[in-house]
Length: 104
Image (cartoon, rainbow, N blue to C red; front, top):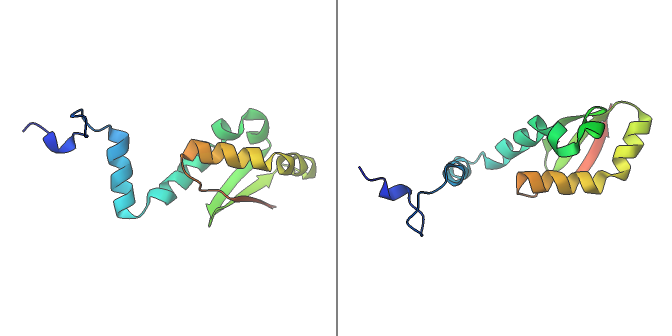
């Protein structure tokens, strides 16, 4: 078996990440997997300063739910909300977060 089915247009093997993306899309779970990956990597995406004072609770219908340590951190996170959304979507390589909601 030569594996020609798993070759891209250039004749080179298709990267595993592309194959996995195709499988997840075909199964209809690609967005959900990206959302869970963002939650799992919250510290890396938000940075230590934010991540140590706020927990990414869930992502639902484009809304990121954050639990801030206190009202001061909630205000700080609200101020940087646009940057957080950009960083999340860049990390996910897809626009999965459109807004942020703060929860208790």
